Length: 264
Image: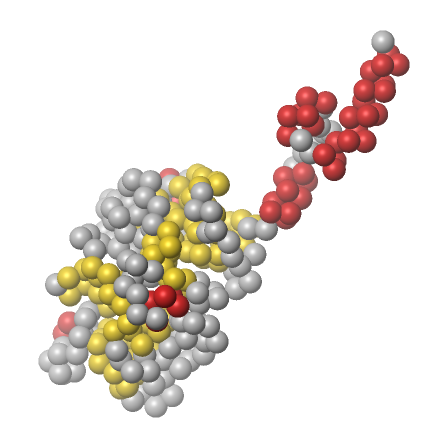
């Protein structure tokens, strides 16, 4: 993996070159010179490098898969391990949030994790710094923090939106089962739906219906505006009262009731 600024390059050494590379499983390189800065003893299958100018700057989080399956956080400047969370079963790629405050990852049977990076840097273990760990059953294949949302993907067919402040589940979005991307082998239940947040955290992008990329607005006002744009007729009196759309319905309700009174 290469970070956005081109400062760090993380390379996993192929099995056939282990002897040539002194049995180093992974190396951190300077992209400009090719110099090996650090060696990492674990074989890394998935990783993310923290964005610059954030609490995660200079950190790499990766899935270690040599002997013990674990999520590991290392400081690229010193090579030191900052945090490590062993898991009984496989977990999916760790992802830093755009603001670098959170580290997220899914797991085979332990749910999705949202970890406070600053607490890890202060010395807390990853499990102690986990602020959210919802487990709705099944495989949590992907997870990401976008703005005030913690979004988790399940079995490639469902996205769940959790309020990062309250911890409540506020939205479940079904995606097409035909859109599954297998991240391991054909037919394996580890299929995952791709999700990513825009750099400004205003939108969530997700894959649906056979590799169709959709954009979902995360701003509540924009969601309401979009929903209203789909309405092909005015709300009726019962709908206005049921959904309590005060700003839009007060004048409408008054006019309708006056018209109904005149007709009577």
